[in-house]
Image (cartoon, rainbow over all chains, first blue to last red; front, side, top):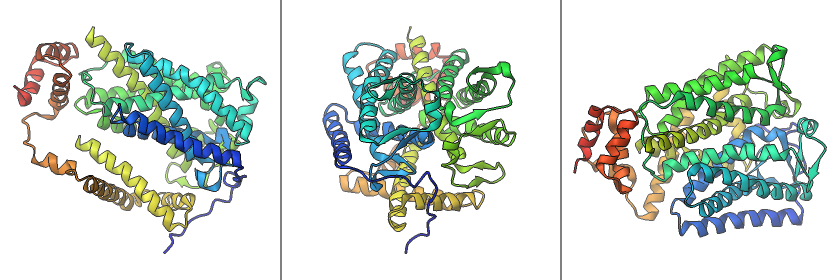
Length: 344
Length: 134
């Protein structure tokens, strides 16, 4: 017996899904590369399948809440998992992350994890650029009107020059998420710190949240805040500062009160605490007319609202997705710092 | 480890439920997701009482099947046979670190120095060494 389902008939679901031969070859190549990489790396790294799973999970989380910013059409109806979020493109990005991290690890074998991280992000720039060029050429990739407005009219291999900011910003988050879980998977002897340094987690939180806020800025407008608080377009340091404060406080409270938790339990605790604070705050800001979601984002809203909070379900789901990437990246860098400090 | 394994069960369970649900929804994952969302949101979250056990049990069964095919003992059944340590929750994480550090070739003296620098008290460190004393 088929479970009754609600058919999506909005513009977010009805788009050209018909692939051409070139796109089909691209899809087969992406899947083949994933398989080859996993088989190849599994000879040296027995946990590569788990690591790849967390890379892919991070990419999917990112794709789920940022997909209104770009369009991914003509990949075939089988290639989509939600709206125009495609598992094939997620695998493609996961492949690139795995390749760049492995290259950085092999070239900079004797360098610190921080150096390897930075080079992984740098290697991602040409890889993603090439991938975007290919997608644009195939007619798969296009950008939302909100993105096109803010991008300068400069292109390099058909890719807007603004990608020079976007690519390192989001790949840093995706690699940060994957690296956090790698710490857990690899069973490295990381010194458990009794009272982590809050003075260090604050600037890390500030950098990560602001980098990300600038990236997702086209999706949502922050209006009605004091003029002097706007630092770039409609990004207000009052609002972004509030997110920094919520995330930073949540991390510090959990680190101090639940210091005996392992990485997994701590991560869940950060998410729950920060999410419980952010959901009502976001609800208040939407109802007060301060947070106004753009047409590309609202076109994807299903109409389901979270009872009591009156927040679209897509926003309610986006909050933990956003937190998962941001918190994992902050904590990864925090753990690296603490361990380096203790070892000195 | 147990929480980590429970987390893995949930992740696997989500994937299993998604696959089965999509098959029952004539291949429309969008439709199945909308159905799940509606069953949770329209009931003010009460629907989770149904979905959480379903996901957990599905993940558990899938993992049991995986270990059965691999002909390896199911991790939780192995854990139950291990003796419980007198270590309290406050130093379990330190004890785990001691084991990992020893495995990586560090000597106890260096481990203790690092733990002291990390803010643990002498008493906490001594207690944490007890369950794994050589």
